[in-house]
Amino acid sequence: MAAARRLDLPVVDLVSPDLRAAANSIRKACVEYGFFYVINHGIESDLLERVFAESRKFFEQPMEEKMALRKNSSHRGYTAPYSEKVDDYPDSRGDSKESFYIGPTGDDNSQNNFNQWPSEERFPSWKNTMLSYYANVLATGKRILSLIALSLDLDAEFFEKNGAFEIPTAFLRLLHYAGDINASDGGNIGAAAHSDYGMLTLLATDGTPGLQICREKDRHPQLWEDVHHIDGSLIINIGDLLERWTNCVFRSTLHRVVPVGKDRYSVAFFIDPSPNLLIQCMESCCNEAYPPRFPPIKSGDYLEERLSSTYKLATV
Ligand SMILES: O=C(O)CCC(=O)C(=O)O
Ligand SMILES: [Fe+2]
Image (tube, rainbow, N blue to C red; front, side):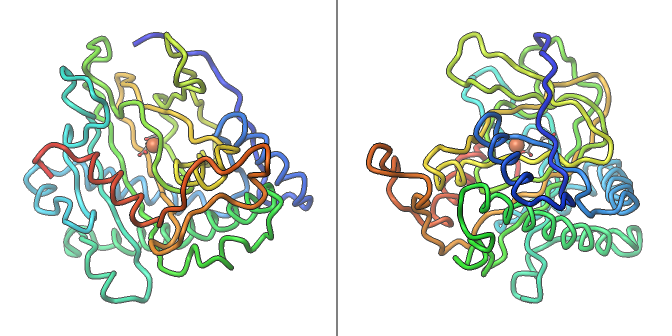
């Protein structure tokens, strides 16, 4: 895999008393990179450590145990290595990562029922740890979205008031990249180049390198830059739906995970708007000279289409 350049993404302090300055820094980050770090995000390091410990414990199980919780039709549960393929290369086997999805967990029992959990007997604190992380990271995500609204010259409550959070849609995804993948084999990649589909992604990693971004996807050859680890930070990125909503003022940036010869764990949290919300160009993102580039579309229709085209193999 070609060497990548080191990149210094903006760092946004979520307890900064100067909201306007934080919003400005987010705007610059989203216009230029589509990626940034947040610090002082309010998620206890102890909770994060427990999430990683439980995640490791789950993935260390024999394949048979993991497959007993394979992803169901509601996109919750386990996905095996090579079950996801986002590239179009005929020789590629797909992504070597394995993952576990946890969907909305709110009070709504009918939604709750779709989640799958490892047995309480062998994993006594697993579910509660994940539920606790889900609640905490969702709260952090909403604070970031409020700053994003300010950064787009919108009301801080823009997303809330528009009903973006009315029907909970956020997904937690535990990820494991095996360390014994041969990095020199071009057909092997942890996660192939992709952009995230939805609104906002909050990513925690165990500090192992591998994540890279490509700022100019149409440039050849592509230039990949390492997103290095900052202790205690979360990595935030903009998804395609928010790019579309902002009329491409904000960028949804191509990224991938390359093998580094070492096991790697990460935890992604994807926040999307309510499925029934109509995504149409934000007022502050268009004018006569820069008209809306996309027709309105319902969030759920857009995301369902993107998701179903990802899982092409029959193993999940
Ligand atoms: O594991 C990572 O660092 C990135 C994961 C990712 O890009 C994704 O799940 O969409
Ligand atoms: Fe991603």
